[in-house]
Length: 387
Image (cartoon, rainbow, N blue to C red; front, side):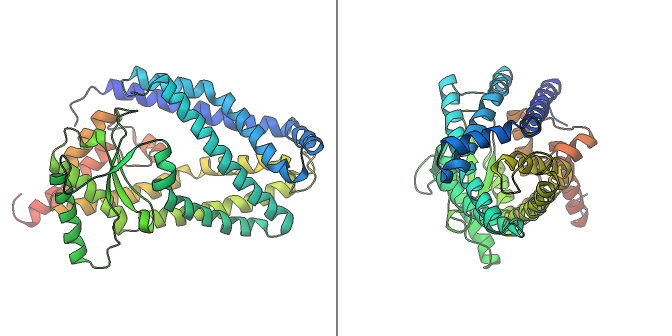
């Protein structure tokens, strides 16, 4: 189906899978070992004697997050070497280290905020903390989804709003804006889109991508410079309409709702686990900060067990967005061409085994998406008497 050598993408996919498996195993083993060995309780006890009471939760999070970052640094380095070996990395060592520091700082900020909220609720309402935590964390998720494109993503990538009056954007942007205007004229309820942005991914990677991001006034389509370069206008339009499909179907909100349901289940299971295992682990009740690794373990195991369901949910949204692109443009060929370009640029494993796609892929494989487009095209031709 594709012209590229299939062995290189398969080797890349194997290396990435091993990285993911090792990373997950190390993080889970670290959390279990830290908890079962009573090192977590020892750290919490030491902090209680050396830092102000109001700072214990924050100090615990800082120590554990920094420790985990140090533990995972060799795997991060290996991941960078994999990207270099397969010709996908364009970032200098200094740039990579700077991004690692920014990721650590962001993780510390969000980690401290989350832990402070969580343990304030555990102390204030121990019987129903998990219900309140679900509500607060869902609200935080919504806020982060809205602020992500304007505050978080720019920490790591440059974004530039594409102009319909200045070259080299003008022709392409006018084409995309005309398509969007036509769709809004056909459906006045179509949510407003606040801009089309070029995502400067090429400074760091040879990979290509596009996405719908943000909520309300921050909602925009971002298209990587690596996807824009050398692509035919109809391919970019097809990818743009695919992202509009997510916009039309409310997929960001659907994703938040799905994640919110998993979060509620996770907090409830964490409450069960804390009440069941706190005495055996030597914790001073469910509000002991030393029990935080148990909460992390619960969410990690739950995420692993529900990964097939989560991936299937996202794959369904992607299929619908593909179908929307086919229908709006009246042809599947531009998106098929764009998918082939993405496969080549990203070294995607085009046609993985079915079990692998079902278990691990958050998007349908390239081959699955192309076959779906070809079937759509055949059905349209048959309906119009062209087949």
